[in-house]
Length: 453
Ligand code: TRP
Image (cartoon, rainbow, N blue to C red; front, side, top):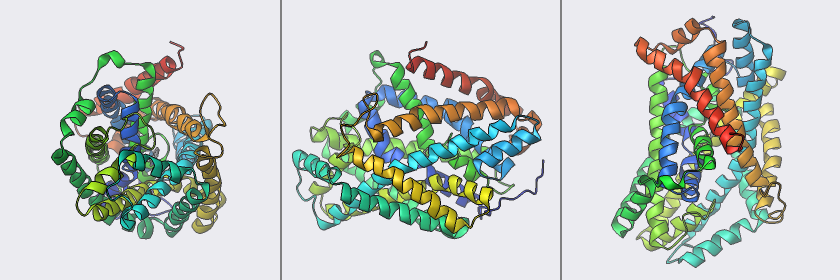
């Protein structure tokens, strides 16, 4: 293997910037918007427990596998799979796995930008003081009004897509690194403020119980599939983002400790978001299972009643935009790197072309909340369909195939040399997980949810 191979697009400048950038890619709407509402819809504690098991048993090993692949290949996901397959005398068709992960990323990005746009709208409302003394009904109608207005949604969606394109067009060091260094620590501080608010307003105990007391009578195959999909989504694995960031990792960085740090940061922030949001949900008689609007209907009530609420509210939504933004960057990067490498076009052009396609796809999500709300396939509207297809089918499939590839197709020495785990029992544990545990669990959960077993 050519150790000196470097990515066309540069390298991270230090270990810390890689961990920050990858954590920032992992932490986003998935933790703060999606994790709480999925937990609410899927029964609370049991969902959280299964989610944590998925992170430890499959998420972490897969993340290590992806960073390893990325650093071995130093290319976009499709190129990396192809190159490593050829080096290991395997079929070139493996590049299709990489290509599919790029498509999954683009599909996710299309709706992700729309939701990030909601956060922009809410930032405006927060600093204008619209949340002052707001009650539950008013908060719900404010959210309904926003999603009923496609033009406004398109405007904010366009704002997010264009900003992402501009950062990606600038390239690795100038764009991504600079953006994440400052944004990420601020988010953590604001979550702590919100948890403090939850503790002082009284319904914290109920929220804690809801999140951490599993009710085993509620177990369903679909719950496990949703928890697994969410674990992959939240860690940004199985669709090229982390693999792509791995391609820019310098040789002297330990992949294992980086992957542990990223997983801990991501999981910690998801749980913190739950602890921040559910006390407000319970204190105001909101339903935990109300779906994608959950944080937008609950948080304004808290901000509307705390002193200096417009400052905290403004800051919170600003941070949410930033957290989402560092993820949109990571979602666009694989597709752009792919086009640059395939067609040798300029980064700027590639970013605008792919960004344009994603913008168009995003319109499907915008319309799902208003004009096309009743157009359904399998009882799901466009947004729900894209979300289901990506989180519950493409991500598990990507995870399964990545595990098979790294576990069975790539030579053991190559992987162990790249991963550099000093203790052999630890390496063996990881390899066991990637070869057997991860693929078998994914397969069982998948087949069970489809009612095949
Ligand atoms: N993990 C991010 C979040 O939680 C979203 C994201 C970024 C993502 N890159 C990804 C999801 C790759 C799946 C795959 O908001």
